[in-house]
Length: 189
Image 1 (cartoon, rainbow, N blue to C red):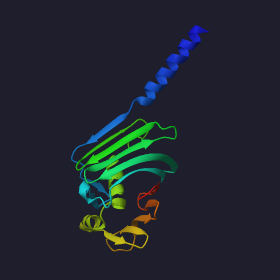
Image 2 (cartoon, helix red, strand yellow):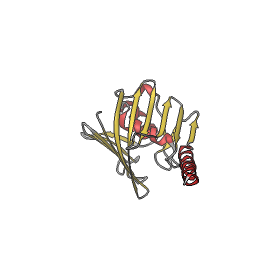
Image 3 (cartoon, rainbow, N blue to C red):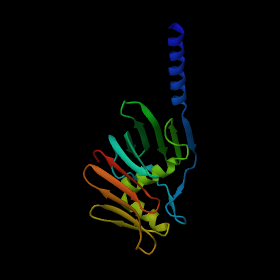
């Protein structure tokens, strides 16, 4: 019986070690992402945040045929963007920080192929100053529109919607029609 319990302890210890092995990504001089196959979006400086936030949010995402949900604590202001992803049990699943040109991303559960600069770009499209976002979008040859319910990014002809952002008082949804993913943030904005 004693060896069974010791074996069980070793198995539990191994499981925790396996789960705690985090992939860390540090991107120095993170400057742009591809919004389309030929249009770059250069990440904006942190001072262009529309309204500072320090709050809990719930994320529902759909990508690559899979649904994903998690809690996240977001602190964003003129100095940077920090996100802590938390599961239902209160355990940290990942951290993301952006302070100008450097991005730090650490996670034991998110796929290693997840590129954190795209998370920052989408966050900026939703929550950064509209005139700064417009200027960057239009310099890449795309069209930026503000609507009654949010924002839209269209191809250069202004016909095809690439990204649609829908805002209410407590939700923000981003639909990337070109890349085929959607996510909704619920919280107080």
